[in-house]
Length: 88
Image 1 (tube, rainbow, N blue to C red):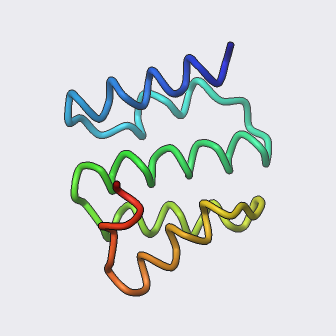
Image 2 (image 1 turned 135 degrees about the vertical axis):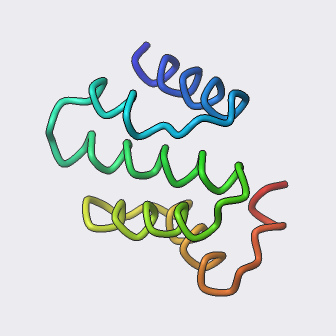
Protein backbone atom coordinates (compact mmCIF):
# COMPACT_ATOMS: atom_id res chain seq x y z
CA UNK A 1 0.00 0.00 0.00
CA UNK A 2 2.77 2.41 0.92
CA UNK A 3 4.65 1.74 -2.33
CA UNK A 4 1.53 2.45 -4.38
CA UNK A 5 1.10 5.71 -2.52
CA UNK A 6 4.72 6.71 -3.20
CA UNK A 7 4.39 5.88 -6.89
CA UNK A 8 1.24 7.99 -7.09
CA UNK A 9 2.98 10.79 -5.24
CA UNK A 10 5.92 10.63 -7.65
CA UNK A 11 3.59 10.82 -10.65
CA UNK A 12 1.81 13.83 -9.18
CA UNK A 13 5.11 15.62 -8.60
CA UNK A 14 6.21 14.81 -12.13
CA UNK A 15 2.99 16.12 -13.65
CA UNK A 16 3.01 19.28 -11.56
CA UNK A 17 6.66 20.04 -12.29
CA UNK A 18 7.36 20.99 -8.67
CA UNK A 19 10.44 20.15 -6.66
CA UNK A 20 9.80 17.04 -4.55
CA UNK A 21 12.32 17.44 -1.75
CA UNK A 22 10.50 19.74 0.65
CA UNK A 23 7.26 17.77 0.77
CA UNK A 24 8.21 14.10 0.58
CA UNK A 25 11.07 14.25 3.06
CA UNK A 26 8.41 14.22 5.80
CA UNK A 27 6.75 11.06 4.46
CA UNK A 28 9.71 8.80 5.14
CA UNK A 29 11.09 7.72 8.52
CA UNK A 30 14.81 8.30 8.93
CA UNK A 31 16.11 4.84 8.04
CA UNK A 32 18.59 3.61 5.44
CA UNK A 33 15.91 1.85 3.40
CA UNK A 34 13.67 4.90 3.27
CA UNK A 35 16.65 7.10 2.35
CA UNK A 36 17.39 4.77 -0.57
CA UNK A 37 13.79 4.93 -1.78
CA UNK A 38 13.60 8.69 -1.27
CA UNK A 39 16.81 9.40 -3.21
CA UNK A 40 15.76 7.01 -5.98
CA UNK A 41 12.34 8.68 -6.21
CA UNK A 42 13.86 12.17 -6.35
CA UNK A 43 16.39 11.08 -8.96
CA UNK A 44 13.64 9.63 -11.14
CA UNK A 45 11.45 12.72 -10.83
CA UNK A 46 14.27 15.12 -11.67
CA UNK A 47 15.38 12.98 -14.61
CA UNK A 48 11.89 12.92 -16.09
CA UNK A 49 11.73 16.70 -15.63
CA UNK A 50 14.92 16.88 -17.75
CA UNK A 51 17.09 18.05 -14.85
CA UNK A 52 19.80 15.49 -15.50
CA UNK A 53 22.47 16.75 -13.10
CA UNK A 54 20.15 16.86 -10.08
CA UNK A 55 18.72 13.45 -10.94
CA UNK A 56 22.16 11.89 -11.24
CA UNK A 57 23.24 13.32 -7.88
CA UNK A 58 20.28 11.66 -6.17
CA UNK A 59 21.01 8.33 -7.88
CA UNK A 60 24.61 8.52 -6.70
CA UNK A 61 23.38 9.14 -3.13
CA UNK A 62 20.94 6.26 -3.35
CA UNK A 63 23.66 3.72 -4.15
CA UNK A 64 25.19 4.30 -0.70
CA UNK A 65 22.11 2.68 0.86
CA UNK A 66 21.76 -0.34 -1.39
CA UNK A 67 22.28 -1.61 -4.89
CA UNK A 68 19.77 -2.62 -7.52
CA UNK A 69 19.94 -3.41 -11.21
CA UNK A 70 17.80 -0.42 -12.20
CA UNK A 71 19.97 1.91 -10.12
CA UNK A 72 23.06 0.73 -11.98
CA UNK A 73 21.27 1.35 -15.30
CA UNK A 74 20.48 4.92 -14.25
CA UNK A 75 24.04 5.55 -13.09
CA UNK A 76 25.36 4.18 -16.38
CA UNK A 77 23.08 6.58 -18.23
CA UNK A 78 24.34 9.43 -16.04
CA UNK A 79 27.93 8.67 -16.98
CA UNK A 80 27.18 8.51 -20.70
CA UNK A 81 24.34 11.06 -20.82
CA UNK A 82 22.20 8.54 -22.71
CA UNK A 83 18.77 8.37 -21.14
CA UNK A 84 16.78 7.34 -24.23
CA UNK A 85 16.93 3.60 -23.56
CA UNK A 86 15.88 3.91 -19.93
CA UNK A 87 13.12 6.44 -20.54
CA UNK A 88 11.36 4.14 -23.05
